Image (cartoon, rainbow, N blue to C red; front, side, top):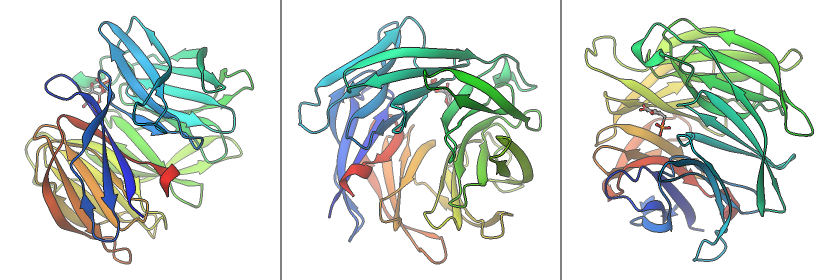
Length: 343
Ligand SMILES: O=C1O[C@H](COP(=O)(O)O)[C@@H](O)[C@H](O)[C@H]1O
């Protein structure tokens, strides 16, 4: 069965908003993405299990989130929550509690919304981080990611103050601080993924171009650092900002995109000490995001600055990638999302 794939974009140049394409997992063929939702800066998106498209959104000076109905081609707007502030950069949905969480890089804030009946978005809580780091990009807190831990806490990754913070979520959507891990100064943590064992997490450091292995202890809600490796070659002398991180369904391989080196780094993580297997050229500039398809046999990456998508076949036993295509057009691509509801 063909898979639906959505692309979030910046709309600073020619992009019209959210794009959708179909992906054939028997051949690895991706159709040319077409615009489906006209919205400013849908830079991150997700689809809830009950089939609501939730996205970062902007409307002139207002920033926030919006919810659309993807069951019809009109993608009717169900609800939005926009206020006078920069738009966030990450959105997550909590199916069990019907909450939505956002991370805002610019304000250093996490917001929690209730999404009842799929019709109204009510703000339940706002948490503001403080602090900074040694790099010029770390002038203040810059939360880049917030999502659920496997045991239902919330974890926030702050690039600005080099922290990984865990929160409990109350029934009314309030966040209660649990614990914080301070990384090496200047690491610039951006995103993390959990392994299927639910106690190992892999963290990408944007400013340091690193991949760190963390141990998550669900009893105390704490993270501990196990090791850190580079995502780029030692002799790379130009700018690089590591960006997206994904893990294979079997938990054996981790993938990280490198903006600058313009590659995807492939790691074997079977021993929990990542071993670099491959650095594949993304055939474009600034690979901001990528995703493994629903079968885990392919990887699709968007090159933000060259407006193209590249597709790779993934060897499921070895973890390695082989380029299949590199010239599928997509303006200002920043998010790749396979719709899990059409699996
Ligand atoms: O990875 C990055 O993300 C931040 C946050 O995204 P934004 O769309 O909320 O601005 C961005 O500012 C930064 O340039 C980029 O490297």
